[in-house]
Length: 113
Length: 112
Image (cartoon, rainbow over all chains, first blue to last red; front, side, top):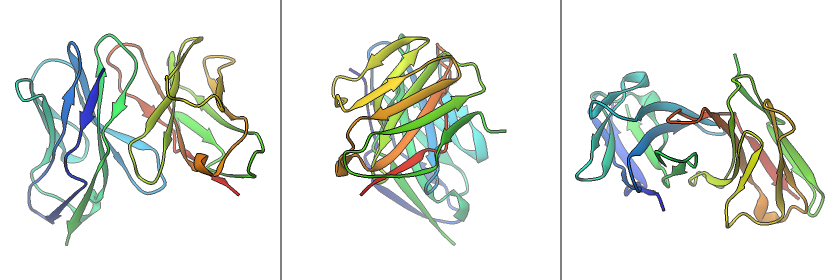
């Protein structure tokens, strides 16, 4: 069975500083990995995905994520945080042969001005 | 342009009174999902359709049913809502394969 873990409930960072939101996964076979962001009372917005290819994936709004197969991790990063990045971030995994997307518990990002 | 549309955005229903939430898509995706999300927790998959094939999660209560009359529409029926069913319900679509999911804005259900 596939699973995904986000070990931090909350991440605090000052505006302009780099940010990292952590994610580890477990899936049989090759994983499809995703990051989504959610603002209050809204649906989830897609940021980026890893299917195959380069381990560093670039996505929307300046975000990127690094796929590390040996550590089964897919951490979300941004070189310079903005106050407007404050939101709830979800990592998700799907196994290559299926349709079921499983979400992590979410990490709330606070960016202080 | 909205691609996955959920109606209504907010729904109030009475305890035990059947309620239906709707979702439509303009993407022509063959996979549609319903998730339940409580209090900023992880969205929990209730079921999904691959075309007309219905796939129920093992832990989805029988109280929750779904219909997909055609490619564009999918409905979530809650036969007898309890207070514990109050949540945000998210509809999503994807293409088969590695496609990302497209989410609607969600319907927030309140049970009184």
